Length: 121
Image 1 (cartoon, rainbow, N blue to C red):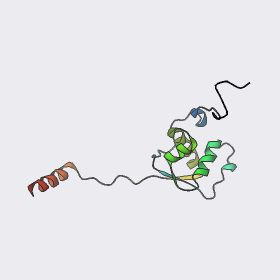
Image 2: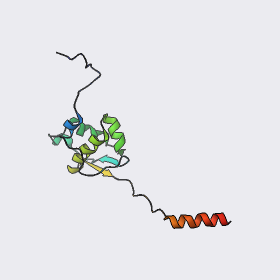
Image 3: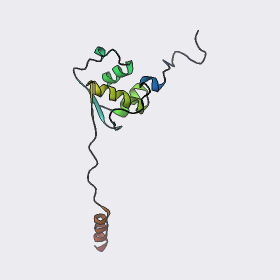
Image 4: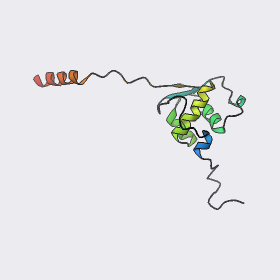
């Protein structure tokens, strides 16, 4: 018997913690702008315990794609996508390329000296 508050457009109703098995943290911290790339030889079908969302992540990552874009593509919260990506990384199905660390920034004393020098001109 169909519910009157669900329609064909609603799709499956699954709580995010169901997809992650109740986990809220990935095995690795993935930045929103980190790029994900599926292994060319990835065979997600060989892993019978993967959710359809895992398989969809592998498909979406056939080309380098940021974590934030994957979350949008799956219409899932970023936290859920990070946990699912951690599963895929652990199985060797995808690699995550973190952005470079922030470049070295000069300390305040150097900046004050530069400002003072410019004022002196």
